[in-house]
Image (tube, rainbow, N blue to C red; front, side, top):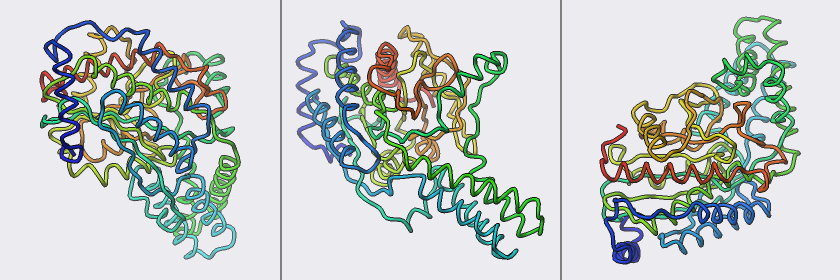
Length: 425
């Protein structure tokens, strides 16, 4: 990828080194927190002012704006077009509807076949797989921002990933649910370290339908029909809702990479290439990241690349996930998690540990490919991202101090790996 950016990137890097007048990895005056706060607020308030559903004109508008800001910070930035379906409610809704109808009217062999295919398709779709069912559905352009800073000559790379598209809201994501649990059952909340498996019924309905076909069980048939058709109804409800502003999810992550680009412009780093990526169509189950992976992972050797996903870092407490997965839980590598925790301590940033989410982020795509990866997010006092997929996810409700903390943490990780590229492995 270094060659793709060419002499322009190398010239900018050399100019920043010459202008800095200091050891690139050594201590110097930091970019002020007030400056990072201003960068974050400008980005979130501007980008939240227009709708950015996955694979849309608004998403493209956001990508162009982010790329221009990264260019202004001295990065070599571009917008790359990929292909995406752009929703998740249509694929999941169609598969579960098919399974539900087979349960109501199909023969045993039909239930086994349709239910089995639907269960396999759902499992693939929600787990960052090949997305084979989506190939049958219409597709359209989606846009990723890819920017390079740091040392373009370096053998080792740190890849930071955020996303700039926004989700539809749904009653399924009502913030009153975790609030109710936290207020009424504080002991349960205290003991909980994993979010509810909301996608289990999506997979379970078709699976029960398939099992009813194999066994002839009427109980499994009725349960499968109820779950599958209920899921299809929920997906229809999600698709009917409007797009949220997405201040926390995930303009806070975009703001973090913009702040990091300023930090690395003012205090350049040597011996490490830094890629700042903001994907499109993350909310349609990481389709933009899948496109980035197809295009760039062959040029990013696993043994020389670290990956940090920044997703929803604008709640009151910064955290890093132990693992994630909608169906199968996949843990992030311990060595890299420990390195990030140590960097947080050195940067004076509080970082919560011990949580696993039954969600999926762009970090999951890198994790499945074997990269040392971590996911940095944030939580409210109810152990959930604030205003998640809800109309209240506005620019005004982002905790910008946490965004600044995330930027400081990312800078510390960059400088740590620049000093020792084998760290965290």
